[in-house]
Image 1 (cartoon, rainbow, N blue to C red):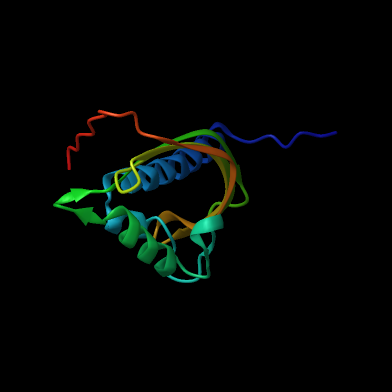
Image 2: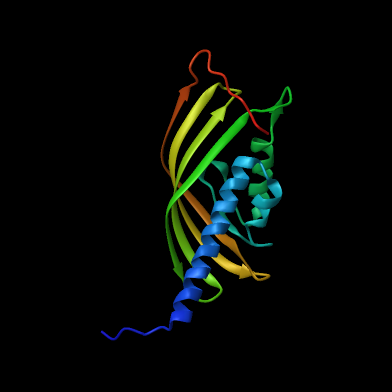
Length: 165
């Protein structure tokens, strides 16, 4: 088997592309937690993203998922958000297909506080993504999730939840 020899510049460029894709994914999760609709939407291509989000629905464009995000994440009661999320993405496995296309898999550690139901949800989710360069920046063209497991339990009596929003 003959190994294709790549120059140092080519290898560095590949690592820079992978780093940019990781930054995109982390920005997306940070936007989820910060309730930042604009950054959330900007993580996806302008039109035609393939989105499969299990119980949250399937969409042929990011607009559908953005609408759900706005409805759930931005809901307030008495001036306070009622859904508080925490996304911790781990185990990135990114494969470059070309200078402008890539695929990736991730594991998500997810935690959510629901102040309507007074519950806490913990879960593990797998992401199967595709990325393309659009307008000089990496964007998600595919985002399919599969819940591995979750547990929902009541918040302990007397629990105090503070918000910094």
